Length: 535
Image 1 (tube, rainbow, N blue to C red):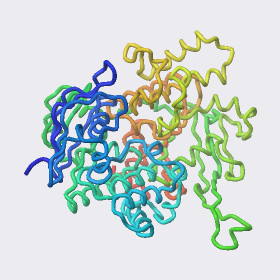
Image 2 (cartoon, rainbow, N blue to C red; image 1 turned 180 degrees about the vertical axis):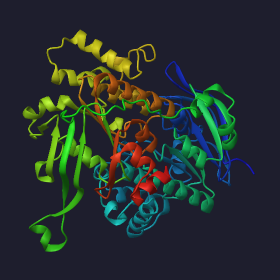
Image 3 (tube, one colour; image 1 turned 180 degrees about the horizontal axis):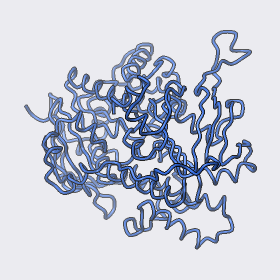
Image 4 (cartoon, rainbow, N blue to C red; image 1 turned 120 degrees about the horizontal axis):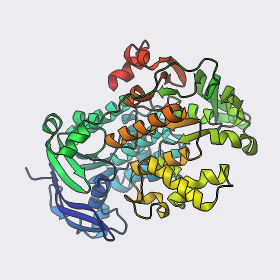
């Protein structure tokens, strides 16, 4: 059987810098090939090059695509012909759904648009197909979610909408760039099962780009390992995992978060860095019919949560996508309207006043690292401006030369130096990989020396080796500076490495809480047991 895709001597360069060098690989019909490697190794660039989605890049080599009727070189096709293949025979799931989805259209409209363009069906049929696709990806209340805009969905729900859009036309080849990054462990299993079903039903091949080695072990037939733009190892999944030959592959396989935190009990009587009592969050929703003219309904996103984080401790919050984790973080940071929140939230013993001037001191005490670094970093600011912005606001007396020195020091602490990245401070976010952008976001938060960090999926965009480094860095900061963390994640390994206490959220309610060791090894609630089993 001939290959569906045959890539030969692929080179990609931006200006004088070559970022992909001589990559050759093949994908058979129905095969699942995983492309793994550290952030910045060239995985995503390789996939984007195949569809010529890299602006300003010099691409050479061949990418022969055989759809069963003819063989065409994707790198030599006229743009008009290639546009016909994109989304139809070859589809792509992008890593960052918030930037890939149109913010002015509902997710249902965006999926339906693809179906109408590619299948030539009626508007009503395309809308119904969009709802069915959302349901297949496991999104709750698919009819209601189809009418939501991207910003109204959680990170995991946005990723599922992207997956539904990519699968709308039953492509022969799916390029999946971190398709489960924003999903919790149970939904990862659902998505893998869905992709497996579609692969068997339609003979679809999958090029899976990921840093999740557990996912690779479960899903892929073969593994290709990239380092510094080169393919260093290629083989069957079982062979790569049991007997990796290349030193870099061996390093990847040995990378796993390690627990290195202060286990001593917190000082008695110390004021918690963050405390909540009876925390409840509601969002207004439209009511049907004439009632909606006079009043609004409400959706309860968080039901009466109670917790406290002592200085130098970490509270891990786990739960499926849409369970209320990010809502809890927004309430903790005083980012919700007073009418939406009831109950008490105290940061270092002080309440949010929800007034800019009054809350300014607390904004320095409590900082945040968001899940999606690309949408949380301004594309119009340089790295120096992004990281130094906090100093401008909270320490305006610091002169420009000293501010630049502090920015360099903060970036160096998170592993970004000018030796690695010439003219680092003058660069923009789009010039970095997803993992590198997350480290910039971490430097931005740490530069004002906060007491509390709210970490919303801080390592979801990082490969295993960088994840291990960042977690070690966070543990070091906690030991040396007494930092407290509110850690929101779907990665049980991260919770196991970082958390002192754990709360488990389901549909906005705390279903289990306690010391991390107790919850993670002897869970009492069936939902917690299900999450741990899926991990």
